Length: 406
Image 1 (cartoon, rainbow, N blue to C red):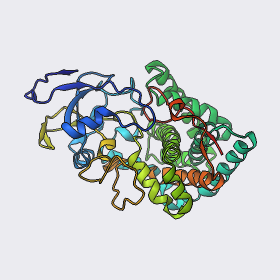
Image 2: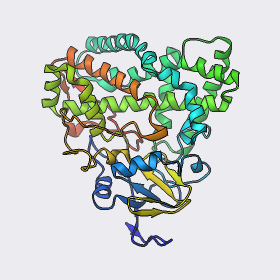
Image 3: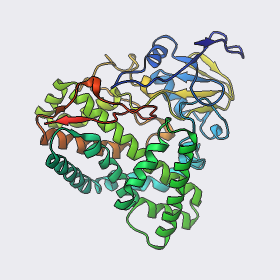
Image 4: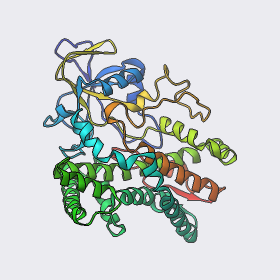
């Protein structure tokens, strides 16, 4: 479907992007077509109002996501066209901020995401992974990895970092699943967001009196010092807790699925375990980890992008997924290549909003894949790929279940 735009952009028709549910790791054909035929195009997504520019090429995506003339803050209060029926972050979240406010908010949590801080999480994460796989092995095949490993481990790791007690993990899992899906509707998602925010208000208040070695205590201390408001600290806690658990859950399971459906690559990792870090980078590049695009930006003045003039006030969405498949940057971009030496993928974003949890996500993926590869040398799918169920109306793509035998 296409309609002619106004404002002197008649050569760029608005195309409705239905964002259909896709199976497996299929790349969205609409996105592939835009990258190939119209790298800066106009689209309308299922929710919100109006239309937006969609930027797909690698260099253009890097430009838009790092140039201060494109604002996240300006999105607030505007019902821009988007995939989800609701905005995921609270209004005070770091995801909506521009520098220097963004820099101030990010600084409040940066210490918890240094390499040294994250390495302190490794022993417990490895122990939990081992315990989860012990339980799976006792239960016997076939087993669902989403239930036994890829679901519970990321939730446990981020909750350990945040300071959420184990008995509250089911509640966090429920809130996160509702919040990060377009399928539950706006009312349910807003309710989950409000309940989760209330939880962190209470938690941060308690941590001011009884601090511990966790991120929630750091946020509470920042509130006490006046570096953050309570609303800002709660928004940061909610965004980190929900996005880290959900994103790693799905992306790590996508990695397992990719290996199980490319047995030659899996066998190579068994023979060459030292290749795993490089393989993870390639899987991060290759896997279409989300549906459509995330939070957009607003052009604050007229800016030319990829030879197209974007006017002040217009909405711009950038696709990291298409950037990772740009043939001008990646040779044979639609193939998995563990020997790819030049791999500057954008799977964790770019610019000021580069994902703070990128090293944590890599750490968790390494732990899970190492455990599976070394412990189960005959690991394979328990069902044909056609029978694997994938999450519907999801913002972050991933299997609903991942049945395996060994």
